[in-house]
Image (cartoon, rainbow, N blue to C red; front, side):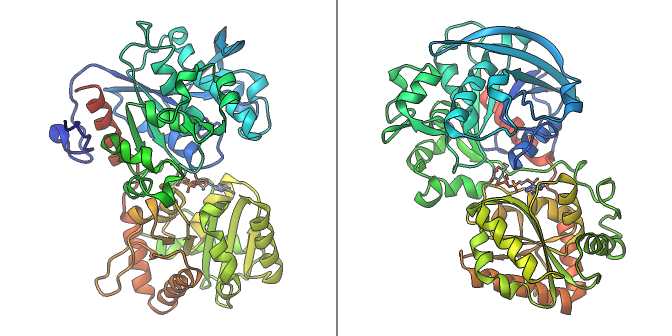
Length: 506
Ligand code: ADP
Ligand code: GLC
C-alpha cells in the first residue's frame, strides 16, 4: 500500500508565497519548545520558535507557544507575566506543582510553565540527567495546562529532544480523554546531534512511562532510552529545517544512530528551510547598528559600520581591509577545527577576523591566543551579546561558516540580509541557502567548498578575498544578489500552513 506523502506545495495547488485560504475555520496550533526569543535564547532554535508564529495567516491559524518559565528570563518580561492558575500533576510516582503564566507579546500568546525547582537555574540547560527530568516534566505539563488555559490545539508542534515525550504522552495517557482526541503532533528536528539519552531505568522513573515504551521500535536505543527517538516514532509527521538535512539524516554520518528510523519515516518526513525575522534583522532600521543602510545605498553606507567596529575593537581602522566575521557557538559542529588548522594562513596582512562566540574551552582559548598573536587584525570576543552580533553582521565584508554539519543555520541568512557575503561549507541548510559565486555567469550569493578540508576552506576564503580586492564591482553584485534573496518567513510559513492543512485533512 502506498501511503500518502506530503508535498509542501503540491496538494491543493497552493503556490509558494500565495495566501489562499482553504476553509474558514480557525486552526489551533501549539508550539512546545525549550527556548524562544525574546525570552530566552541559546541558539537558532530560539530564533525560530520566537519568530515563525508571527508569520502565519492570522485569519486562519491561532498559533500559541508554551515555554518553561525560566528564572533567568529578563526581569522586564517576568514582571509582565499574568498568573493564570496552578495545579498538581502526576508524573511517575510524584505529584508536581505546575504554575501557568501568560503573556501576549507581538500579537502571539505565550504560556509559561512555572516550577522553580526545575527552571530556577542560571541557564536553561546544564546537567543532562536533571535536564531530562525537567523536560519530561515540561512535556507533560505542556499538555496538562491546555484545558486549564482553554486552548485546544488541533496540532501540537514540538521542537527538538526537550519536547520528544510530547507525542509519546499524547498517544499514552492523554489518548482517552475527549479533549485530546484526534489531536495531531509534529516533531521538528533542529539538530539530530542532541537526542536526550539516558539509561532506561532513569527515564522510566522520571517520565512515568510503562515498560511498553522501552523497546527498540519506540524509545530504546541499545540499552538506553532516547527522548527524541520517542518523538520521531510517535509524531504524526516529522520535519527538519532544510531539504538537504532531511536527506542527510537518512545516512549514517548525519543520522546519529537514528538513520534507520529516519528512513522508515521518510514518507512522513520533509525539510522546510528556516527563515529569519526580517523586522528584527533589517539593516535599514536596526537600532543596534550605528549606521543604517539598505540594498540601494550599502556601497556608500555599510563600511561606516566597519570602521566603527574597528575602533571599538582596537583593530586597524581602515575601511578597505577585508573583514571576516564569525558569530557562533564554539563547538565541533561549526567546523572550528578547520579554522584552527589554517588560522595563521587566514590571518595574513590583508585580513581582519572578528570572532563572537562562546563554547568549548579549547576553541575559546584558540581564538584568544590568535587575538593575542595578531592584535590589530584578530578580535576574539568570547561572550554572548545580541547587540554585538548585529554589529558584526553589519560591519564585516564576509562571514565564515565552515560547519561539519548544519541542519539549517541562521547566521548565514543574517549575513545575507546585512550584505555580508557568506563563505560556507556545502552541507545541510548552508547548501540550500547560499548559492556559490560563478564569475562567468555573474550568479551566486556567496562562496562555498564541498569537502571537510581546511585547505579547501582556505582556498574559498582566498578566492573571496581576491574578488573583494580585485573586482569590487563583481563583489558588490554578489552583495546585491544576497540582499535581494528572500529568507524571510513568508515562503516557509506557507509550507508549514500547507503541512498543517494536509495533516488535518483539509
Ligand atoms: P545554532 O542554532 O546551531 O547555534 P544558527 O546559525 O541556527 O546556529 O543560530 C545561531 C544564532 O545564535 C544566531 O541568531 C546567532 O546570531 C546567535 N549567536 C551565536 N553565538 C552568539 C553570540 N556569542 N552572541 C550573540 N549571538 C550569538
Ligand atoms: C539548530 C541547528 C541550526 C538551525 C537551528 C534552528 O541549532 O544547529 O542549524 O539553524 O537549530 O533551526
